[in-house]
Length: 230
Image (cartoon, rainbow, N blue to C red; front, side, top):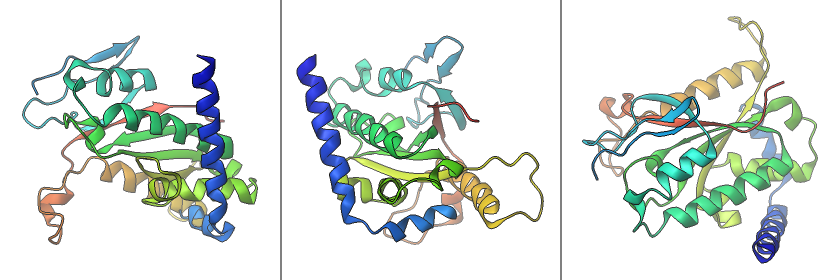
């Protein structure tokens, strides 16, 4: 057990050193910015069974814990022969731990092929909901880390993690109005964008232009609560 902890800590230190290659100015973008499985239940929460015809979660956002995701999509019998899921889950844990050293992370929206019946997904797709006010008071070093997780492909390219990650800075807006600040408008736009995106599943070829059918909500995704909102 002690050896595992030491190795995990060493890996985290190596990942954090890798963030030094980014310019602090990059952080400015964040201101805007095979049959049916049994449901996995812990307490009052439940991850619905995958649709046996499509292998997808039912439409909508489903609340769960990290332990429930691991049970349903890593250690489940259906994925016993997977060659990628265990390693991807370790990358998720390392990536989340690193991001939490840089900013308060309230929740994560997990979608894509990892939350389907696909035996060997390539990565885990996630949108982290971080505290916008906390982010604006963080150091340049912390902003470099946040920017990596906010930029498509950078968690893999910079850190070697099999994560396709994005970030939404959560804002406290007691009364939404037609005219708000750029920051608050950006929050609502980004939240709606990712809620829409994780419920899509492209039917046409990725090498061809998207079609109207590609924009329809067809599958669900998961929300993991990570820390309390203020």
